[in-house]
Amino acid sequence: MSQPTARRSFIALSSAAALAAIGGCSILGREDESDTPRGKTSQVAVATDSSRMIVVYFSVPETDKTTGLTEEEENSVIVVDGQALGNTQYVAQLIAQDTRAQTARIETVEAYPLDHQQLIDKARKEQDDKARPQIQQLPDMSSYDTIFLGYPIWWSDIPMPLYTFLEQTDLKGKTIIPFSTHGGSGLSGTPEAIAGAASGATVSDHALSISRDQMDGAPQAVTSWLSELGL
Ligand SMILES: Cc1cc2nc3c(=O)[nH]c(=O)nc-3n(C[C@H](O)[C@H](O)[C@H](O)COP(=O)(O)O)c2cc1C
Image 1: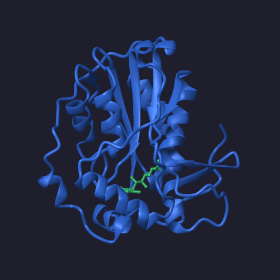
Image 2: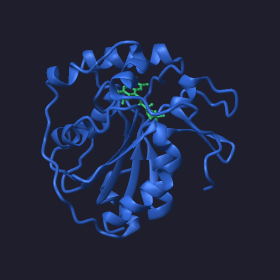
Image 3: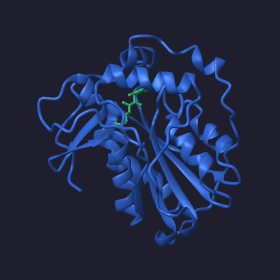
Image 4: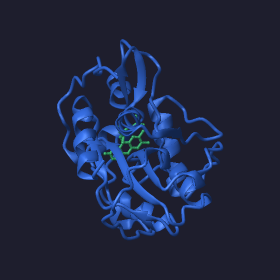
């Protein structure tokens, strides 16, 4: 895959500014209020058989345009080989390329709006309602031992369709390795949230987290992270 052609045109935001930028209001207080069950992550040894690995990801690129993107669209999209990819989608592709693992995208039955404000509002309501949006069928996870699980941070948490996936899939005995992109808040405790929702799975404590402002460095970040994992 060649290097992205679109570059972030704005400097890295502080956490508070990034959070304000996603929805016009601060959500810093929400982490303390969260009653999402948080589990324990662990150091994991990763088996190297790529046929037993899969990269499962969720990503919502806010446009399919490749030029003339607004700042909001550019926050969520990276243009690679003339294609508009979501930030997390791009990282998923890099991991798959390096590991030769399969990929599968978590897609909801009801598509998310591309309009930024509508997307923000819908995601917020889903979180407030503890919704479990219906998702489309994914490949049978029994064929895999290791799941790289990718997602954007949404309101300091994993997007609710991730909970649907984690709760409705038999993940007993699997190793889950989280990776994420974000607008300033880092992982926000999401590996622990995954561990709390993925019954019987072991969740790696060595998650990858990439800021949307640093997507240009994603290929190098992915390669060194995989090598730290022994891959
Ligand atoms: C609904 C919504 C909520 C978000 N909440 C946060 C947040 O709490 N913290 C943060 O750092 N970024 C937040 N972001 C920014 C995304 O995590 C970031 O842009 C990410 O790279 C998008 O990935 P994607 O293009 O793969 O969907 C949010 C974005 C959206 C659309």
